[in-house]
Image (cartoon, rainbow, N blue to C red; front, side, top):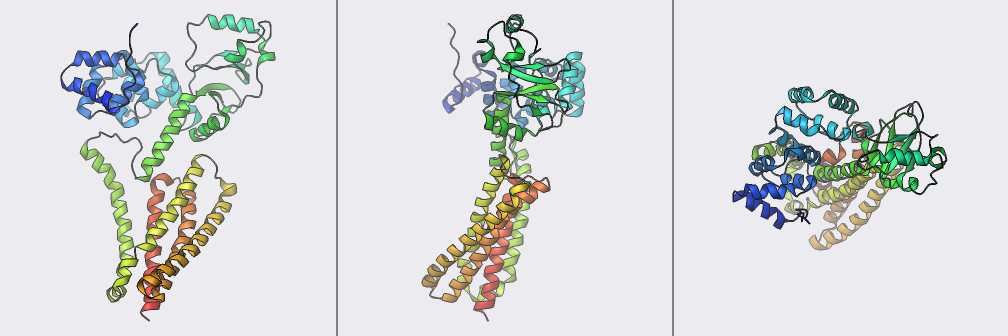
Length: 453
């Protein structure tokens, strides 16, 4: 019995392969790669610096290229593809499911895309064009077209004999779909139900007619929400005439959920969720500099507010100690609301029908928090600095900024969605700019009015 290598998901296992590679034990590394699953090889490539990645790719069995490319993140995959000639790339794409085929082809440079299509046989070429005809991030773009259909008037015995003619079923098959002569979806029957039916029973009597199909144009995020809500393993995809075009399986949905999570996490740091951990220094620096430039602009804008009250700060040094409190509290309160709303939008809880109620609720939360913490800070600062005037100024500014932060934290992602701007990427920066400016202006403005007049 041949032993297989466990998933290389620990630093020790990664180090073993890296050390073997650095020692020139290429034959040993090749054997190790041959025993690994495609997903694990993809993980290894993503975990390796660019020079090692190139060597590893040359040691991989070309027959595994297609399955590995499916598993790679976009940026790493693009780098690997640059190492392949069009003929080898076309061969790697031959046996891909249609959704994975579209995923790989969609981002190819136009010249390489045309070269790869030329190298494909006619069947694969038509399959690729069909897969790419659906808009990105829709049900059509993530469905695969490999599935089995049945007619309602045949018996279960006929179906079972028909299935035995196949050497294997399409990957992830848990359900067979019943269609009419025009390929319109009538119902489905699960494999689990099929094998326990009386062989004489017709498909029409055994099938489930309450099947919920996914519209072709539905967004992939909505598809993922439906899978989560209904605990589906697969679901059919239909067009406006209810013709069956494909199916979506749970493995594709898991990828969507993972990508959404990575997008939200990296977006908070103003980074691309597909960014290669081991990308070249200049590439990483150039990408990050874009948002650093925007952040510098917002920081200078907030600093200009402080500059307006330079005379006030020069006369009351105590204000310089306290002035960071108000923007900081506003930023934290606003980001709490922002995160809540972005999550609600991601899982489909927030729409036009309840957006106004949410804005009102978060505005009231901001007012309540503003009042609570205004009283708290007034007492603390008055005792600390021995001045009720300073306590009053800080408390009033705190109330204003927390109230604005609550409303802004809810409004910003809603407005950005209307403008087709990603709130996970830009929302935090917009909110911080608002709370910094409002916090500083209210605190220093009130200090000028109350303490110096």
